[in-house]
Amino acid sequence: MTFAESRWGNAWIEALESASLDAGRLSRGRTYARGGHVHDITVTPGRIGARVDGSRSRPYRTGIELDVFSDDDWDRFLSAVAAQPSHIAALLDKDMPHALADAAAEAGVPLLPGPGELSPRCSCPDRGHPCKHAAALCYEAARLLDADPLVLLLMRGRDERALLDDLARRNAAHASRESPAVRSGVDAKAALCAPPRPAPAALPEPLPVPPRPGIPPALPSAGPLPVDAAALDLLATDAAARAHAFLTTGGDPRPGLTPWQDAVRLAATRPTSGLTATTRTLYRRLAAGTGRTPTDMARAVAAWRQGGLEGLTLLETAWNPPAGPFDRARPALAAAGLPPLRPRHNHLTDDARGLQLRYGHDGRWYPYEADPGPEPDWWPAGPAAEDPVDALTALRQRDDSIPPAPSIPPAPSPPPAPSPPPAASPR
Image (cartoon, rainbow, N blue to C red; front, side, top):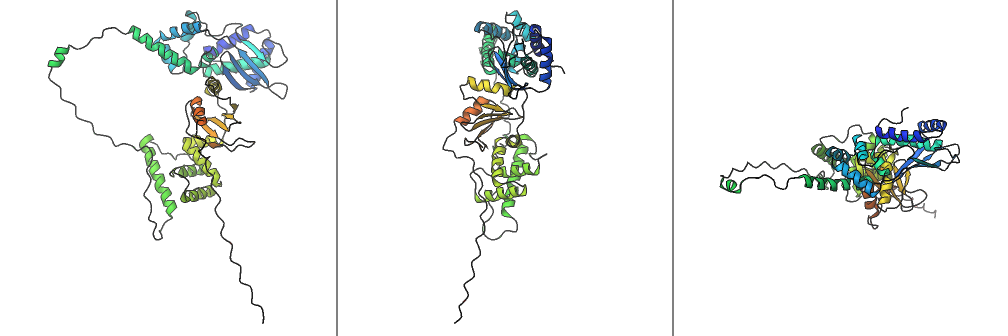
């Protein structure tokens, strides 16, 4: 198995192997990396850390340290990047071309780690340089750099947001210096004396697409109806939602859904202005038809309204995201002064406050909240966000007076039959 394919990953492995004092430990480190012994990789300025399974039951705490750039180093590096429009475009597109390393070296800033620059640290008793656990982390770090080379810039001391903001300012200043002071124009006298051109014909106003599907008219309440009123109202509301989806996205929201997922989608088309008696009845009927409880349906509807099918999938299934944005979330939250969150699978959780972020396959962060306790009951809370800092900030700023998502009470049982009157006593 090859651990690196890009120049970034291969440079990392070369820096590790060139400073190693024991080829046997490197071999065991590769075996550990292939066997999935490295977990919970985190990247912070100057360090990449992880938990590595070894011979004992509790994983070892392992890290690799790398020197961060000084302010002068960053100034030279960003000036070299801003001088090349192709480098700017690549970084703004969250990519790092290999030529960027050459430009950094010419500016006197070695972006790639050199021999002896990686400093392994591990809680195991082995004093090898590196031990097999640190070697396993190094090989996994090479894969991480293949997938997201911007991680190297974070290790050198700048997170992605600060780097791109600084680069955008330098690019604007560089463009203003290179633009000519006097621009060619049109002679004012000739422009004023020229006959006016006829105005072009106005384009027809396009019909505006409403921001949300419409609500069908209410059915008459007087007299019996030949159809189930609640079912007819549901079908009409669903037809409006599907028509709105065709107008806004050009696609049908139903393809490939399971009966449970389609039932949740149908229930989510109901208006969101509270749980009316009709909505409660709808939730009970759809839940019963799919083998779920009404509370399951209410929670699933909240997840669907949060993110559609992806929101429902995150409610029901955890997954292990690949190295990249998920690993950079905790350092970004810490840099923003937000409380630390415990990682597990695609979840970042604050157990003490009952707050949680779930990372979706679409790259967005979905906020959840629950009452703190040994078995928290998690409910979707608010819309998804592209940035974990924005998602957690909005979740913490939610009004405490907003009650949690309501559950559906069970259907009332029928009243007991009246008791027969006592028999008359004989005279």
